Image (tube, rainbow, N blue to C red):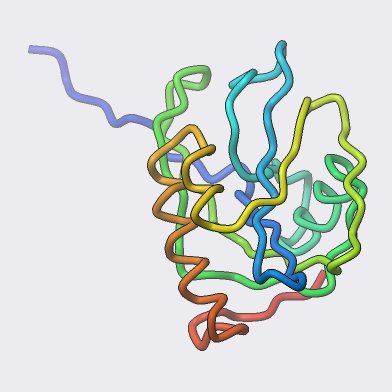
Length: 158
């Protein structure tokens, strides 16, 4: 009988809930992946891969700038992880869910990785995202934004 081997578990980067507060409350930035990219046509949070010795906060700042042209006012580590099986790499990916707060007047300039974006309140964002783990993430982060900054968040700096 052949010996069992494990499925790889990797943490190659971050999943980022980009949020802003405007006159009508907190909004989530939901991005649609461009056709030709991995998960083309799917709606979700911004994601980014770690390069070299970057810290998580540095990954967030770099990827936020590259993908959306935005600069965060603050970056927060939540207690949540986004985890899923990634068939392209035949591995389980576990990504920390980071909250990036941007100014109310922040203007998005999309990179070619994404084709569309929407700023949505939690109730609408949860119906647009493509994965249930992001629905749960939106619900959790939305509840915690009510007492911003949430007591279980840790501010991180690049």
